[in-house]
Length: 381
Ligand SMILES: NC(=O)c1ccc[n+]([C@@H]2O[C@H](COP(=O)([O-])OP(=O)(O)OC[C@H]3O[C@@H](n4cnc5c(N)ncnc54)[C@H](OP(=O)(O)O)[C@@H]3O)[C@@H](O)[C@H]2O)c1
Figure 1 (cartoon, rainbow, N blue to C red):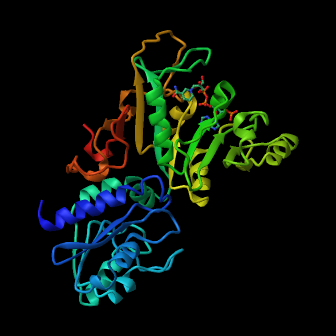
Figure 2 (cartoon, helix red, strand yellow; figure 1 turned 180 degrees about the vertical axis):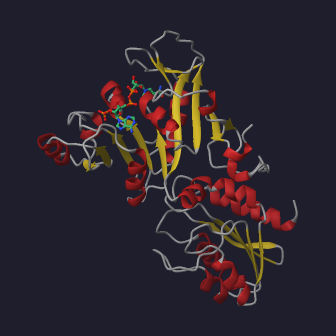
Figure 3 (cartoon, rainbow, N blue to C red; figure 1 turned 120 degrees about the horizontal axis):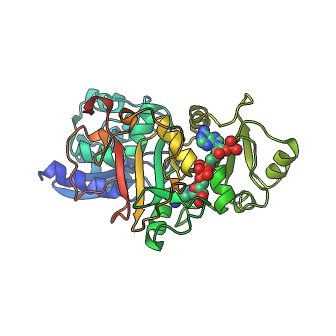
């Protein structure tokens, strides 16, 4: 590693401290270096809180004059909940800026770096860019797609079953795998299940450990069958719950709303909540990453609609068998093998390049699950 990479690696490690805390913002780390020594560093710790550059420059104080600032994401130029970073970098007297990645946010998108250049600073980009891209995978993918990043998660037997024919699924996975799954929830803005899962399991769907930022639980439930006595409904005052439906009995709706449940009805009388409509509704509510936890019909529906950015399979050493045991991915029958979704262990963001495995990635380690990504269409056989 050269000097720039060494300091950028340090900034990336700082950035990773924010994973699961900064949503819907990206994670960002920053290191201020003068004469080869770190004089200030920091990371973005939560949305609405100070940006990494602000923290690092405040720690550096007057020592920032004549320094090089390493930041994992292009500094912002727009006024959000906090003031823009570029003017602060200029007034601190920074001489050189090294950024790992341009910010894909259309409000920034290269403007921050060109403002710095125009002000006479030396600017370098792309240092550990692949690693920075991967670290902010959910943020980058959702910004480009203008819909939440979708992770499909399933706990399955080796023969790919999610539950018995009668709907028993507790427990297929080990306690350690279930803890890991709850940690995965914590990395997302929301978790989603179908009403079938709620009626079968009465889950609570909370992340562990608790998140200090908004976390939404979502149920797809065309006819608003969600029982007001369910654990989801009873906990809705403390932990937000949104039910997406197509028609709602007025009395049931009132009882759920009285418990603090938000109900959003898609216009039209057909069954099955439209997934693009659901994702657009979630996006409008600020949801940038969504973990879909089933059950079988819902996972199959997301697969059939190709609304999938990653798949987390928690496989357990069990063989269940049986013609009617629930498959992990139900939904409509594909016409042929050509309809199968082809997967790769590599994020398509990397475009075949390799991220340094010693640097932090977007998912927890060590893994008790397999992580797969859809292969880009062009790369198919
Ligand atoms: N092992 C695991 O990781 C795991 C995880 C979760 C669940 N499970 C198991 O899976 C079983 C439940 O699976 P399931 O297939 O019966 O139910 P499900 O997938 O949880 O829910 C399916 C229901 O959701 C509603 N829905 C609304 N919009 C939909 C859409 N666009 N696409 C699909 N469904 C939509 C439909 O009911 P309406 O028409 O009434 O809206 C549909 O019948 C349970 O046995 C549970 O224990 C296992």
